[in-house]
Image (tube, rainbow, N blue to C red; front, side, top):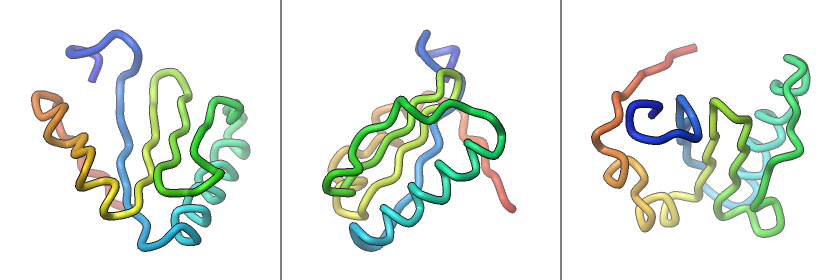
Length: 88
């Protein structure tokens, strides 16, 4: 992302199947970031859990419900960005 924008190096984009699923993913992301000592105060969307975002400076994490992800289509919007696949 850094070659396209000046506010982050990476977008992490994932999908949950429901508001509960998105909330669970967000909770896990927040827990993992806290374990790494990363500040998690810059977050939004936990009220309805259709789209939750964590802005941690170099990495911005987006957690969408499927229909919201398809509607906003960040992958298309930022299609010039290099895709980095990650497998656990």
